[in-house]
Length: 148
Image 1 (cartoon, helix red, strand yellow):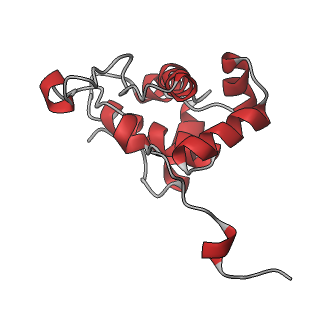
Image 2 (spheres, helix red, strand yellow):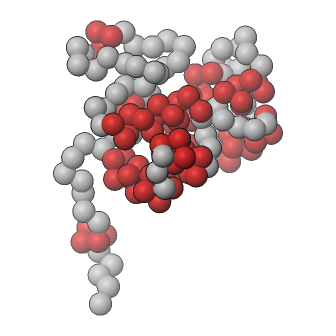
C-alpha cells in the first residue's frame, strides 16, 4: 500500500546540501575574501565545498556552461546516471534544475557587462547559438536577453 504522505516518502538529508546561489560568485563584482571567511577562499569562480565531486562538477559547469548530462558526466569520467544521482544527493536538486539555476546566475552577471555581444554571452554560457539562449531565457521567465 502506497502512503501519499510526502514526509514518509522522502527523507531530509542529514548533511549540508548546496544551492547554486551558495556556490556561485558574482563574475563582475566578486565578494571580498574577508566576506567569505578565512576557510572559504573562492577558486575558479565558485565557492569550494570541500567535496571533490561537487567542486569538480561546479567547476566544469562554471567553465563550460549548460550542456547535456552526458557532456558533464564525460568531463567527470563517470556515467550520467551516477552524476545525476550525486548532484541530487549533494544539492537536493535535479541535474537540470541545478545547472539551469546556476546558468541563470551567470547570465544575470554577464548581461550586466554591455561591452560583450549577446552571442558571446550565449557561447560563454554553453549555448550553441544566441537563439538557444534566447529560448532558454524566455522559457525561464527571464524575458528577452538584453543588457541590464
